[in-house]
Length: 246
Image (cartoon, rainbow, N blue to C red; front, side, top):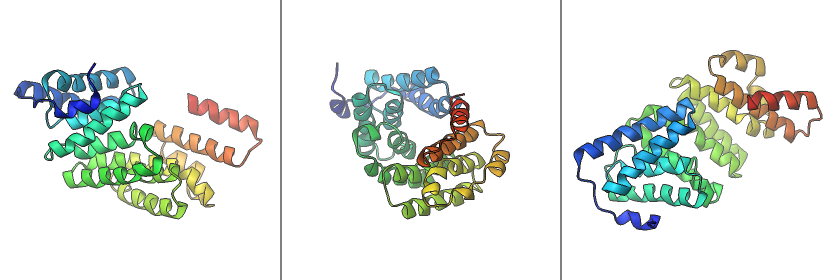
């Protein structure tokens, strides 16, 4: 029954064991996300948030609240809790996982309460903060949001392309999965620039056969392009729809 905005003034957590428990729970979030198990992700986020609601705030509370905003079904509460997590970074300036806090909120609940273009700076801050923290894996995973947020937010396509090229250049030697995921995700905006053939289908699918998620994203992007083209190839449209849903 508490008001989310008032939680910012809660007491500090003093129990060392509870702090370690919360730390363990927030580190589990990315594992449950990659596994794609919604139940486990909600469980981890709910428990890490509940530690702060019951026992007070710690330097892991910002990322706990930001992660919970990713799974909360109530849009209003999701945005408020995510914003609380970001606000708490001022109270805990030495908090670990600041980049993950920003990224988790930017790619989910932030967009429920703010216009899409306003999320661009937070995606950029998340990426560069991860680099500063030495959190290279999360810098990779958060990087694609830098160009997709611009694309969906209606930013000039040439500016989207410039960031897209930066994202590919960063991930190509660093994270093979995110590199190919970003290539697949960029196909629709490349189509608008007349450049979608830079991600050639046969070669791309051969490159990503070890990454089913990338295949799914590529097929979804192909489907999006066909809609933009107002394609009447209904068998192909239905085939792609079925493939993506599977």
